[in-house]
Amino acid sequence: MHPLLHTKDNRGCEEVMNALEECHAQGFLWKVAGMCNGAKEDLNKCLRAERLERQARNREKARENRAKLQAKFDEIDRNS
Image 1 (spheres, rainbow, N blue to C red):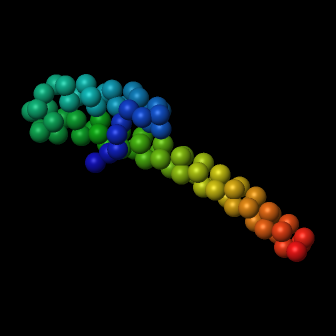
Image 2: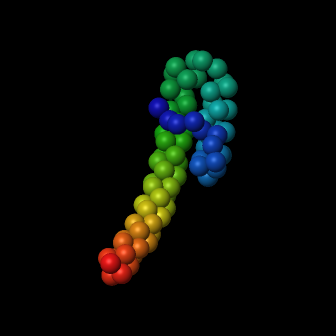
C-alpha cells in the first residue's frame, strides 16, 4: 500500500505515478493478471527513495534545532 500519490512530497515520482495510472486505465483484467506489477514496484522504489531523502532532511534539521536549543540551555547555565 502506498501513501497518497499526488502530494508536494512526491513530485519526483510524477512520471512513475502516471505510468501506473495508465496501466490501471487498461482495465481490471490488467491489474488482476499482474500486468501493472512492474509499474507498482517502480513506484514503490521511487516513493521509498523520496521518503528516505525527506527523512534525512528532517533528521538534519532536528539535529540543528537540538544543537541551538542545547546552546541556549548552556548559555542559561553559564549566566545562572
